[in-house]
Length: 425
Ligand code: CTP
Image 1 (cartoon, rainbow, N blue to C red):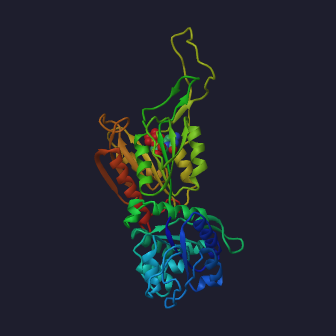
Image 2: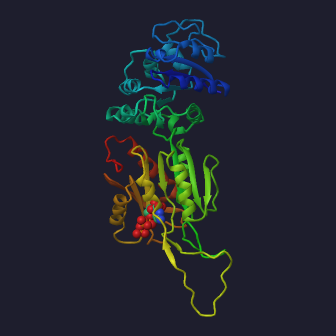
Image 3: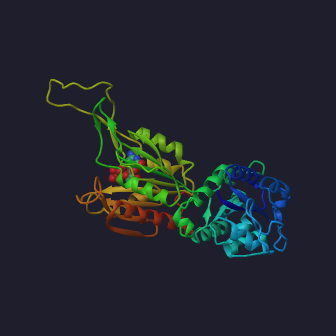
């Protein structure tokens, strides 16, 4: 059970912070709330005080009757400075909702009220749950501030998409649902080690990975398949989970050990993989399309087992499958990061990878040369080149776990880069 310091800043979503407190205290956490003056115009301190069972402070020089202690903790015998003692006692500082103004102050290190002073003094992990109008969220200033906070190791949750407070407005900017905010706080506390150490991480982000190779049935027992083992996809999923991401793997025919932190959706065919991706794509922040998906499938498959025909030949007609990644990219949001994988054979691999980067409208393509027998399919090692719009990184032969590490570092770096070309624009 943890001590959660909750910073509430101004915005209509402040009412949702009450539900967050209710859920957090019901889960056994001790919560103290501090509010910005603007937030009290939306929700008064009495509500937070009632739900936390502790006084709520607004001003920096206000005396804290509990002297910085959390419920269940005994107060010190001296009278400490509130903004220092509250953060010294906290296991995590969660700012929810975080307005555009408060985010800007956190990014620049301004300390003009209790919440921002406390943030500056905090050495515990910082989680920021933004909530604002969609134009304010999209503004380059806000995006730059978010990138600064993320680069500094803060966990910034992706706002929800949907109806906003002002009449008729919809888009990104909604405070993530309180249960989701609590889940992110708990993940952070459970120790995504990178996040706890203030290093880049994926806490608060949803990662969708496809892995393995699809099988397209010819009849009840035979299929058209490929040699993908799913090792690369599983290594990516494991690394993403280690970095604190909420990971779902759409697994096509993989018989490998599974990670208990990851959710798996098993599929066999390209059509099933497409359906599973469609169900999770909108909610995901990062898509890693590592599966080897059939480009062709039997135009019809037989429900029973085909018998040997009298003649020496048998013909299977193949039809094209849809390009699933390109289809998802067509309805992507600018804040999503999409990574394709290209299995290329021999010379010209990088050029063909670059062509795929543009054609599939993704942020990166990870190219591996399947002409080499010692890496790639079925092997424990891989050697890849990560192509982005701005450059390329070659990863020399390494275990798939190490390659996954570099790929996810590149994804995090790309998300932190402000003003990078936006394929969705
Ligand atoms: N992919 C996909 N749907 C398909 C085929 C591939 O979403 N029907 C995805 C793969 O998961 C991978 C990327 O597209 O992330 C590149 O796949 P690849 O087969 O190498 O590229 P293609 O576009 O099929 O090009 P080609 O076969 O001409 O090399």
